[in-house]
Amino acid sequence: MFPKSKIDESCNIKNLLDPDRQSIASENRGYMKMLLQYHKLFCAEEMAYRGHDEADQSLDVGKRREFINLTLRTNPKFRSPHAKIKQQFKVYDYTSMRSCNELIGAMADEIRNHIK
Image 1 (cartoon, rainbow, N blue to C red):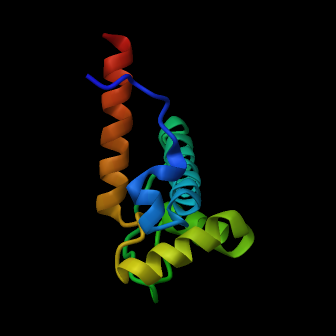
Image 2: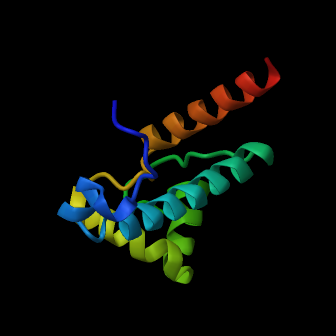
């Protein structure tokens, strides 16, 4: 058998086909970490997530949407990956209520596993 050698990331076929892959993945990880921190804050403070009507033209979109909109206006580290994801996927930016529920479920699973 061949001797095991140290893996050289520059020779990885994914990196050769898409040289920007690592920087994009790192940026996306940062975006998701920020979203998880926001969800963690809302859950820990037992803050209501949803508004009466979450449509863009609504007067009461809810604290979660207001907080994300504020963050988009004030934080370029959040705005840049959000815009790229929104451009790439058109409608999916990980800020929908469905995404929120999935992230909260994932956090709950991690807490249960930690308790076990």
